[in-house]
Length: 225
Image (cartoon, rainbow, N blue to C red; front, side):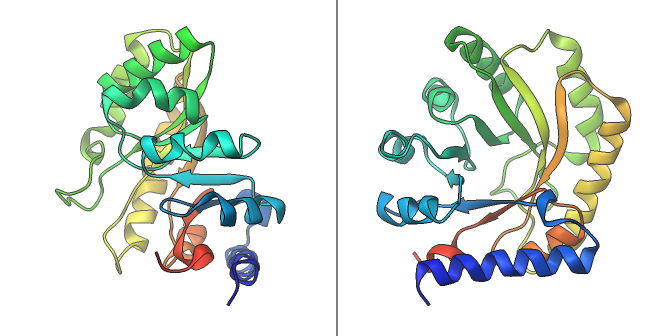
């Protein structure tokens, strides 16, 4: 199947999943995970109407973003503090904010650059040591601490993100939605929106059923790496 056909097939799956969940397709955003792929297929997807692209590594994105600045680029991989300055320049949206020290650094750098960066707080729900994120048991208290720590001008939280264990993802999607609802009830000023970033090629239908607003799809669109 060609790139364009895979892309349309994913869009169709999204529409069908939304209908099954009683949701409007406009509630779900498709983030095309373009890591490791060259700029040519990304340009083709952009020409077909895809606006949002996800990259894992700041260094790789440095070579792509200037070639297609009209697209909206998202960082979905872990962010080292020493790469935060470049990330602020490249990415208007970061899906992997996993610690307070990084939030403070992004805030300072965004203000210095005259930018506003949107970020999802990553929550570690599967207790997998290989994955980062805030502990769900401490999430509300920790984010209340963030909220009270300072005035946030350059960094705006827009929701929660998780990377659940493979093959058993739906209960973790449901848990992230519950955590989001708890936070939304508190109406913290640090949060601009309360979206959910969850679901990938193999499980995004389940994520949509549990309320996802951003699904991160790579292989189902671009093919195997």
